[in-house]
Image (cartoon, rainbow, N blue to C red; front, top):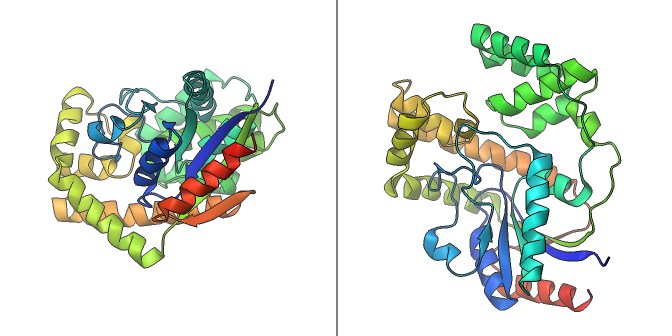
Length: 306
C-alpha cells in the first residue's frame, strides 16, 4: 500500500495555524484534521480557540469538539482517530491537513506509540487518593524525579497527564517517556511537516490580544455553563489553559484580572514548551506563519512528488 500523504501544519499556540490551514484547504483542496489535545472538548470552543463555525464552513473539519469535558483520551487513541479521519479525507478526493501543536499526538500519529501494559487499578486508586489528600504538587514533584522528560513536556497543573504518567511508572517500573521511545510499527503515512514561525514579541502580543478576544466572545459564560454540568476541577476538560484559570475565578479562587494574568502567563509558558519540543523534530521545514503563498507552494510541490 502506498503511504498516504499528509501535510502537517505545526506551531506554537497562537501562531496563526487556523488561518494558514484555511488558505491551504482552499488551494489544494484539503480538509483539516485537529492535532490539538484541548480542542477536542465540546464545552470549550471559545477558550480552546477551536475554528469557528464560519471557519469550519470553508472546508471539512475533523476531531474538533467531539469529547465531553468528563472524558479523557490518550495520544494513542487520538492517533487512531486521526488516521481514520485522514483516510476518510483521502477517500473524498481531498488532502488531509493535520493542524495543531500537540507534539506527543504528532509523534503518536507519525510513529505510533508502544503498547503500554495495563495499569494496576490499585495503583490508580492510590494515586487518586493521594491527589485528594495532598493535592497535585507532591505528585508533580514525584513525576519530575521519576520522568523529568515527560514532566517538562506537560503543563505543571495538568492533573490528568501527571496521574497517567505516575500510574504507568508505578505499574511498570518504567517512565512514560521510556515507553514512548520504544520502537513500534510505523503507520503508512508520508508527512510534510511545516512549522509556522512567529517572532516571540509578536507572539506574546498576539496571545494577549487573543485572550481579550476570547473574553469578549463569551469565554466566562462558556466556562460558567460548563461548570453547571461538570463542576469538578479535576475533570479532564478543565485541565486546559484558560479553562483552569476561569474555573478558579468562577469558584471564587481569584478575581478575573488575576485569572486573566495567570491565563496569559501559562499560555506563554506552554508556547515555550511547544517550541522546545518542535525544535527536536526531524525533517521540519520552517516557514513564516503569515507567508501563505510559500505554505501553499511547499505543499503543492510536495504533493507533486507523491
